[in-house]
Length: 348
Image (cartoon, rainbow, N blue to C red; front, side, top):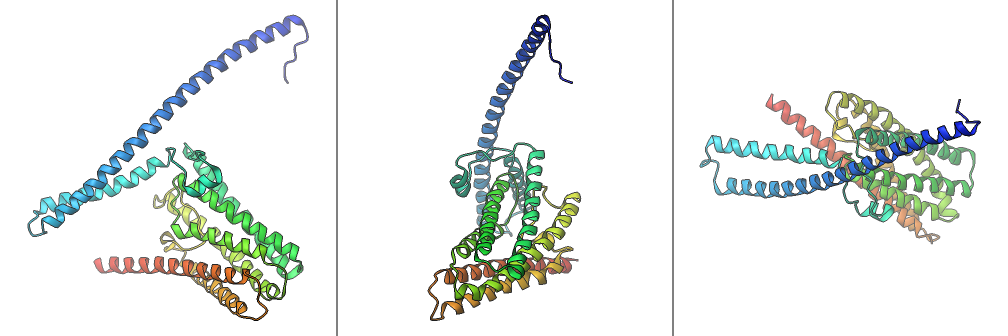
């Protein structure tokens, strides 16, 4: 129960206590600002030192390569060759160490974040905050996946209204835009997301925006059911399947120390999924070829005499780009892992 003074003497005593407490707050705040300035100076010092050492390591790497080129293997003694190999291996480890360090240092935003947020520092300075933001990102994806699945099911089988379709596409635009911003922030905080799996969200944002502007008409109705069925499969079923199994696999690999703590689930296939998640590949490839089928369907529609909407060609190009990026990236990962496994089996 909060104390409420009733008499003047009690009010004066309460004020004196508050005055003492205020002095303590002022002192704590002064100390906080002092420490904050010290932390800022340390951050600048660390960033500068890392930049200088990285530059020198680059120069050293070039010098070591020149040594190898100028001195053939026959002229290098075994000790010299071993020394060069050890230094080069240490330089690779140093590069990874710098990446870990920079995840806790402020850095300049990339072009996209600068355009969206301006020059705001988005680096989270402690592990708890980083993990909390990463977990919130994963929960956001899961919740929106369920909502998008239910929404697409409603539009496909229950109601056929252009207004509902527009709301669904608007939700897709907002979802993918939000993903791109959050992923950029996570990358600034140490998440290692492969290039295409980030870029394909930009393509998906553009595609959803074009679908949103596609006016009601014969061609829209021709493609509508195919599009909504694709969304049910790709955005609903496959995305939920990937989240469920990838999150479990990542948790296991993190516990074994084989994955980085800031690694995320992705809407594709990466090398760390090779053990235990290869059963997802048929579902992924089916979704990729469905994107190709959507693109071919739209290109055929564009050739019809009654086609007047520019959205048909733009959507067709977007689906073709998604197919090529998803298919060849996944195929590259599978081929790379297969050849690595073959080399390991030969070495044994």
